[in-house]
Length: 425
Image (cartoon, rainbow, N blue to C red; front, side):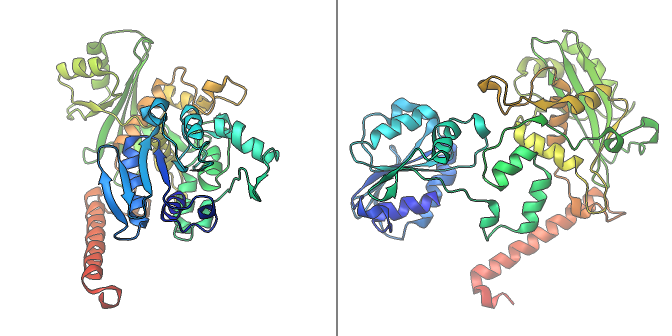
């Protein structure tokens, strides 16, 4: 929607804005960072521009000059507000919520041109966001009036169900992996505050089992170790887990040390997790613990950097915790992991009554067990729920089926490209 506004304004064909912004006009497309700008916003604008309307491009300044004299520039918030100073602009599109300082600077760029700005965003920062207090609430309270018969500021709330191109089953699958506040923001586009437990779906009755009753570990499972080192805190946690042939993640062992000891002590503790005689699996360690990674490697352990995307990690954990259509969960934890079991039940979001800088973040006090568990989950292949009920298939056979399906799809796409939709057979 934001890219469509941009293209229509730049071409002078917008049904509303073109009356006050005739061509040529000049504007910016502002993204969160350069990567998003170059991989999302800019390709989308180029896709929507008709063929042949680009006169020239400035690769250094990231500006498209159109035949009608208009220009479209691409900028990112991570360059800082000072990079937005000086120039006047007729319009500005923010792809996702900008920093407030950047927004204020851009607002100043549109004053002398009586320009317009629009933001397309998912309100992931909730009610702690500056846009909620200074834009959304003021709009709700009717503090903005009309300018020339047009609202001075307007808000349009769109849900994911308003997009006819998204499969409803995919929406439901995603909903199961999201906490309540993210369902509000990602599914319904509402400002919501993260409160309560981070993993309310975790149940010791469902997800924890006595070690003696667990399926016997098999060398054929995919084995990994997730590890978090608390620099300056002394707490270090590690978890040994395997992805079984029925796609269930079984966490078999816990190492937790609250003392600030050397890496060689941690190495010895981690080795005791693994069944004697088995090769040591790869350890996925917090990428900030560079020195510990080197020291563990010196003891002969295989160590690599873990994926530290917190939200993605939470989604992966919920994916394993969730039940499939037959009521089976994808995660089982041995009762030999008492610290993890305790912390998963206590790990919670800081409420709205906390200081503003702490809102919508999980409490980071003594959470090394959860972080190590998160690294373990993120290191594993995506859980294939559709295959869970197909008994007797090994992980290799499941992977072969998946590859075969992908190749079949690629063959169909090649036929469509060569012969068109009617000639696909």
